Image (cartoon, helix red, strand yellow):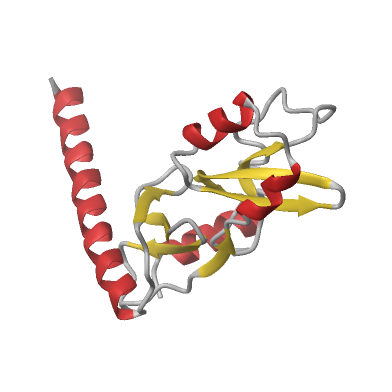
Length: 175
């Protein structure tokens, strides 16, 4: 019984945090005059206090982080263009259409050397709160010979050490 009570309390706490973050994000997007047609928020790695925020449209996305403890009503957003034009050089295959559907239209395309990379923004970045321009955790190489066998969560915990953990704790504490 105690386990159910504790789980219920934690779940309620998480729902309240999500509602508070969403309210703040809508206010901040309007206040910072960021135009968007869709957005989402999701907690970052292993906790419920620092949230990953993505807002944008078919041109690109603003990505930032918001702590439940932030006192300032602002987010330092980084803009990532969607770069759909880069897909013109790729055959419009069923696989590419599945990637677009899977990402729920929250994606960008980048060129790394001679390879096109499809990023699903919903899974977050590798320590993005510390390095706002870092790679995205879910990226798929749009090249037949590329190794895409373990696509999801590439590098989710890459670079984690004591300094990274302290950086996360510092960001959670708020601005």
